[in-house]
Length: 301
Image (tube, rainbow, N blue to C red; front, top):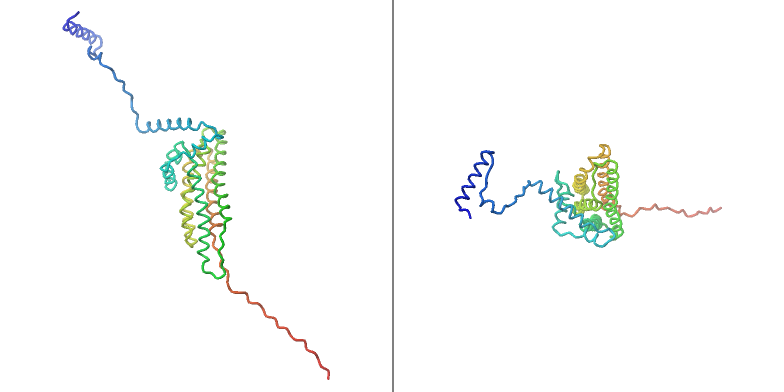
């Protein structure tokens, strides 16, 4: 067995030979070779971490949504959302920020139908109830006015609002799918993501319809136009990154159609549910009196 001094001398001799051959080389002692080596992984910046998190989220969401649409699990996942997520998405629809996509920053590949369903249901109730209440406040005290609840407006409001929240996204989704086949650079969202964006965009109309109980036409128009601008801004910010990749004329026409259809909803609700009732005169019409002349008989003298 070699002595420790001989081993150390042999080690120094090997190191001297190595340095003479390659002056930039580094040497390790026998003790260092016996130490366990630890591997280090390079850490990226925050943007790379967000991209990795997004990719992981997309992978998990694709695995989660693998169930067919005819199964109960598929629809159960669409209602699997907590209160914090719903409130965050409602807050984002009230305060759209330029540069922040509603789908990418708030839905995160996990659309839900819980929020859109109850937002539409609440809007149906507020439109009909506040519309009847506004008419009652305006006509209260008139001697010729008899209040009668107009329950048929609930059906009208439900058909209009739910049709807008489902049919318009369906048409937009189908059009984007067709344009994606024509121009591969055009992107699109899933149908449920499109419905989710439209459903949450209607949340701005709920407080505006509540304020329509104030019997001033100018005030009603102002708050409805403000809600319409906020809601339309959410839609444009969400879909413009995909639409702008299309032909310039097609992109402008698509955005114009989205905005026009979005304008028709509050204008139609204002004209039907919050119309100003004309005050009719309560005075009874004055009839013309006719005088009848008694027949006279001529007497012959």
